[in-house]
Length: 110
Length: 116
Image (cartoon, rainbow over all chains, first blue to last red; front, top):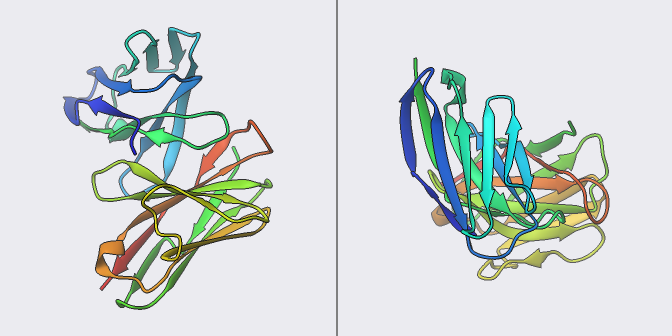
């Protein structure tokens, strides 16, 4: 079963704008990860945030984690057309058995 | 990063036939691999955990006789969809974990199965 839900389900923005998506989960976690999936392709790992971290940055990505609300957000700043993809949060142990959220489809138009 | 290869990337088969999908870790040994299924515009659903040298562990609701998993070596896991039907049409993705215990996870590019 899926671990959580993501919103929005779909997001359409213009290049240069920021994109924010949220993920909620149900059980206690050690860490939460975000992945990107281009249409018809595999997953690319973006960032991992540990349960004792509240915010993490990687390039144009900013991830927050609120364990009290069991939620996380992914912010993509200054979006580019190449950021068009589906984004998934995932929880699970470092043993690799991940449970994915429903995903957010992001479309960035030039 | 490490590379996980899936083959074939696309396969079309007739209803009733069996299809084998391979997942290989190209530059590392993976004692554990995972198989996911993804329907269009939906999330990934974990199907099973593939353990080298032992039986796979299937998630609830996944038919083990329908989806045969073999992990005969440290670099190869196979998923065989037996007696495939149109409802088995889906995108199948594997992931492989480096090392034992904790380790990094890498995903294959996925295999799209279409059953006519």
